[in-house]
Length: 223
Image 1 (tube, one colour):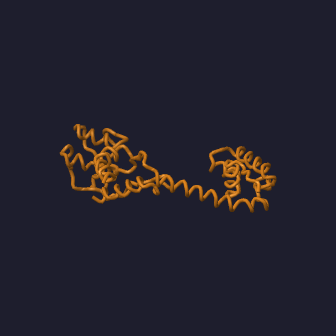
Image 2 (cartoon, one colour):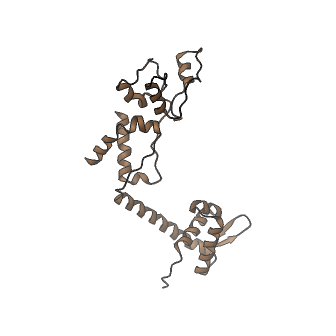
Image 3 (cartoon, rainbow, N blue to C red):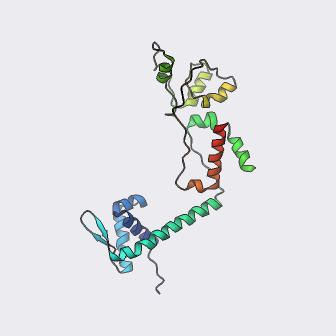
C-alpha cells in the first residue's frame, strides 16, 4: 500500500470546495483567494492522478473520484476538530480574556471580579432622556441638551462631580448610589427593554474556565 498522503492544505481546500460546491465560498472559509483554492485542488488532482471537479463556466461538479474521496475527508476533518476542542478544554489553564463595554466593566464587573477569583480558587443599551421624559409625561423640557458622553461611566463621573443630572441604568449606578456619591432624584424608572449578552467564539463553552465565568456572571446577576 502506498503510504504517501497529499498535503493537508490541499485536502482541506478540496473538502471545503466540495462541501460548498464553490471555490469562492471555500476561499472565504479558508481565508485565502479563490485562485489559491484552485491551485491547491489542481495540485491535489496531479498528486492523486485523478480529476476531482468538472469545471463549467459558472459552476463546478464532483467527479466520481471526488464522491469516493469526500465522505472520508469530511469525517476525518470533523474528528480532528472534535479532538482539538477536547484537548483545549482539558488543558486550557491560561489567561481568560473578557471583553465588555467600559461602563459595564467599570461600574459593575470590576467591583465583583474578586468573587470570581475566590470562586475559582475554591452602550446602545441605556434608555434615552426622550424615553424617560415621555414616561414622566414631561413635554416642556428638551431631551437633547447639556453634556453628552459615549460611555456611561464618564457620565456618572460627571454627575458625581456636580455637573448635572445623569440618566443611567440602576445596575450600572448601584455602587455609586450605595456609596452616597449619587442620589436618586425620582422614583420613576423605565422598564428594562435592553440586555447584556454573554457571547463566545464557537466551541469556547467547552472550556472549563469559560463555563465557570459564564455561570459566575449569572449568579452575580441573580444577586
